[in-house]
Image (cartoon, rainbow, N blue to C red):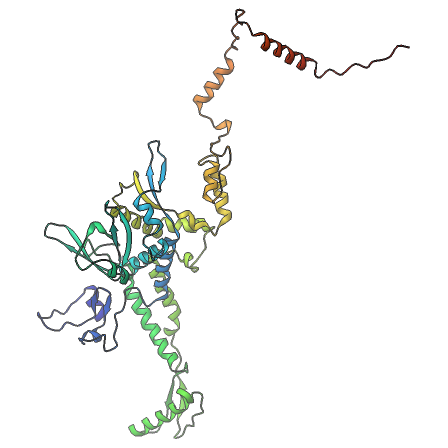
Length: 460
């Protein structure tokens, strides 16, 4: 616990100013081990930083699930109308950036990497380029960012980690906060520094890593079971080394599988796994559950776990109500802050989660069929699946028994009211002769058109 107590607090051995402090050391890109920290040129000695999000299939699965799912959801700039509805804004700076953030990335690439960086490092950065009208026209992801607070409380950022943007723009000077997209998770150490949920499961990952390293060492030994040579004779140190060397010559490396010959009453005894070692799979399973719990990730999303959900829609709804819903809303609010949107419910960015049901066509059609004509028009439902408008599809329908009481009373009153008599015709009004003749011909035609021609019988 010495290493982890130095990382997360606990009993720390205080060192005098300027003296050596034992690692590991937390840097901006990860952890530097204690052994590597003793060397000034640790990178030249073959050491590297332990990234916050590496080493673990479960961590990779959780981070990838969030980043890939967010990248699947197209975003839209929405504005609320006076009648309570909303309209999609297509001519704003945000709408143009959502279609193409820059000339070398799609919006899917942008959201995929922003979300991945957010959950691995706890925060993600992007540099916003403005035109002469002060509108954001481009956004460039940056791998590294560090905030600075001025004496007057103003905020600036030092950005780096994008080879393309660093060649096009001068980022040597601090960038004002109004030109930086900064998405960050919980900020326990500093209001402008986010922390990843990976840190909450550092001990679980360390325990699983120790167990897996032990297994790796076992399989690196050609996956041969370990043996102990037993004898009742007294052996010298030289004889012990000689016996071990001869045994290794027949059981390791290129000669693995050879037949060792035992003398001096030696007996080979295989070292089996203890009861505690047999619980390795259960321990790793518990570690994976803790990691998924920290990420608020349903195990069914990853294809593992207990009882599956009744449908894909129920599974995605459960995830959207917890971890995924927060991730989408958190990124939406960060974009809204950069583009100076009024916020909910007046003006906001929203990622469309309906795209997550593309693989479940039957459930999507059933939902649209139930809503069409009631909550949304038929044409609105058709637009959800990329179909064009149809005549008469812009009306909402309701059954007669579902009308309000006020309307029912009005209909009853109209039924009991006496019929209105038409006003008497005005005899003074005369019709022109040509119109009167045409009307007479039409009347006669309508009157006698259906009468069969009488049968003519000749007289004898």
